[in-house]
Image (cartoon, rainbow, N blue to C red; front, top):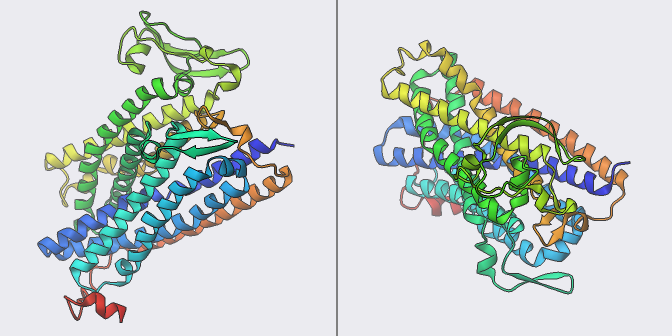
Length: 462
């Protein structure tokens, strides 16, 4: 029988890994829709209205699934991780409460106006509703990442009788990991949104459908990725260097650094390997000599803390953080390079409606952009969470003390139930998304106009 802690972690990993597929697209598409609708309001071109309506259908489907899959996470804290809730609920409960009240309720208050308000409320009010949905999505990401960042680098608290008491809310909220942790995740959301826009557009262009409609979106997504891709790489590099101070054991696991490399010695960089935890070494490894310090610390002879500097019980697993980190990096570079390739082709006037079908290799390269974006997010999350082990609150509360005492059979049953449920949800969602894509954009229906432009909202409320 599997131990309770392993089953509880596996269940939460399944819930989190499936849920995290949807919020990044919600954030990215909501911002794209706000920009498109603002352009429609300013320039008055029907093109921008049609774009907003088309992407709004995919946004609504994605938003709905995100809400459905996010609910089990809230219950998991109380069911599977009750000691964590009792120990740190005074702060974590507040942060998650802020997300519900200040972010999710903002989305809920305006999403009805955004979806059903076309032709009923004025254009400016509708744009305001779309902006509030986009703002609510971004704020939701902020508070969720703030809670997670605090668990990575806790501060502003003290321990009193087996409980954590908040002594400085500002210090707790603005913890050491927040800026880079949230920044890295938020840019990942924008990258994923651009990947959705570009991949869907490339699919239509590859099939010769609605070329005039989707070619500008492909170009726009490419420009966004050409900017966001390198920016994300820089933020990720800064976040990795910060780990040397905040979570050196995680950095050692990510880089397969079993032994400490003292300053003044040029270290090798491990490209690929198979770690052997029992022998605290690798069964095999492919190394690049004398560049490890340059890559990890930006100093040729920089010192790198190894896993030998930590007690055996305080060392994180190595295989998952090591390979998840490298897969994330490869995906990130792929997104940036294809974005730059497409932006360069557009700048050279090679992507025109008449010539776009001649760029089959480029369009097929976009087919991998969306899987690459999703894979980068999943691997980044596994690197962040598995690398934090064996702590649930880093340096304060071990994961083994945060798990509830549940029968393994109950966890196995619920894990199997979640797996079946998410398989059904994923199948239905992608089937409906494919139907939306097959139908394509609506280019013929009349543009609805509010009967009372200035008092459209009052008309709706009545």
